[in-house]
Length: 460
Image (tube, rainbow, N blue to C red; front, side):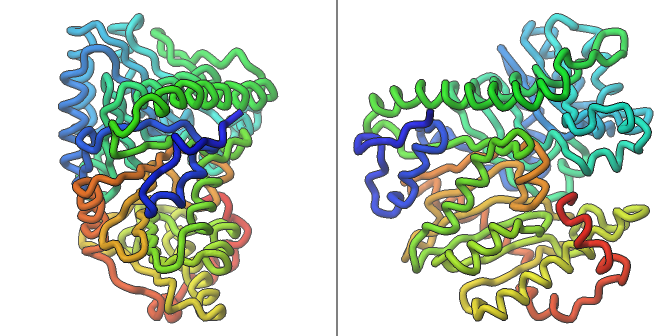
């Protein structure tokens, strides 16, 4: 049972009191702002991973949709393997089953050499949604199986540092695909996310030394029931642990991190609850800047933004030219058009409800780049810098809320230095953005996309 908080646990600055309710939603990890590293460049993201994995001494844990198979990924894995052998540390990887085994050369085949070399130190798990653990799913191409549900958490842990991101461990995300990356050094937070990965691994397939995949010992029904129980027990355990630490650590920290888990299929909805509450409860005169690579707001989010929110709102999304699906073969090639159509319909609702003076929509377009950043920045009334941010893997959309496994965190700070760094990050993302409301109204959408987007909206 999550606790409701008391006066000794609540935020003191007026600008932060709108977040007191978070103590009843998730465990709180107080940290010093000096222990938070904000990365804004994909290449720096890769360099940071390389440095952390090269110098780790106890553990490396990764949760990603997949690991790419290009030269950069192979180099990163080589560095990691050498350190795993040298330090005799634990190396754990959690990927999505269908995405991680797609094609003849894939994440699993890339990792097989490490598994074979140090089987006692290395474990690779492949999560598959219970909805697909039936015989007929094998007859459906993996690319379409992935529509049903994915392991979408992006967590990169090296010893006591955890890097929260929406970026996959893949070549595109290391070069010219813009995402967000926030690294936090805190042993308790790293332990929490490491245990979260471990809990999902319990209900996932396991890669063996012989190249075969060992299936989970749980049935479809048991996975649905036991994973819900295991994740909720993990959250409650850390709420209890952190409650005692937060109470005893008076005024030692200037920043607070609340990890949020979203696993709609298992009725775990922390991120959805927190996002809805933030959008609905922040005061008039405040400013919320939202970003998503794939604009597909749930109806609940849309209604809160248009009916309940008092904040000024900006929504940043990928221009079709900056969408990762641009030029994809088959039906996937229509996805950028589908997102534009959904955005166009939302903008019409903004106009119809006379909200255009409070809500703005922007698109990111940068030659040669794609846009995959996501999250939220909260600016209190009268402040030119954000005091809080939401960062992680969720896209504010139907998939993130209903189908995929997502890991987020809300970071709240009274450190002026960290606030300024968050503002710089947000400003950098908006450097290549322009308002798009009027353009959306006149943008053409292929007929077949218009005919099908309503049927498949919850799948992308």
